[in-house]
Length: 111
Image 1 (cartoon, helix red, strand yellow):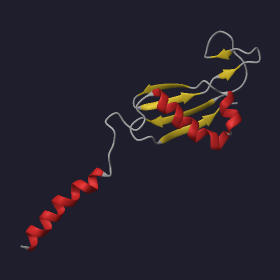
Image 2 (image 1 turned 180 degrees about the vertical axis):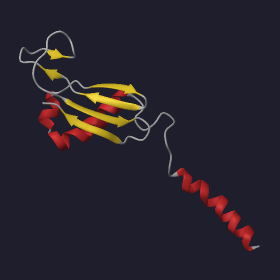
Image 3 (image 1 turned 45 degrees about the vertical axis):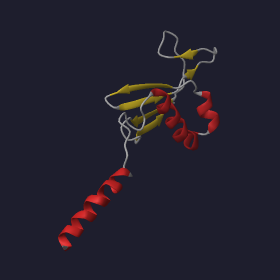
Image 4 (image 1 turned 90 degrees about the vertical axis):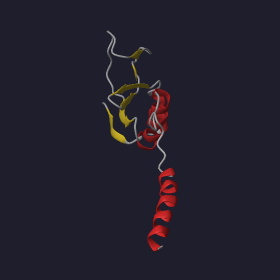
């Protein structure tokens, strides 16, 4: 009887315990918009609101389950540089975020 009671408790309580560990099928960071919002939330306390605002718009690219979010370098001539012919000095934030669990893999800022 004791064993039956234990089994009933285990089979009753285990599903409730597992329900608290819900993981979305497409991961916690399912799309580029979410990746950018997560990046901004992490970057602002480190680099400051003014610096992060100056690097907008952010781009997010997914590769092998990792989002790479990078800022936009603004040149003195007022143009943005996305790797085109015109280059200018400076650096931007680059942050890598796991699509699966939202973990911050790395965070850097160029000079």
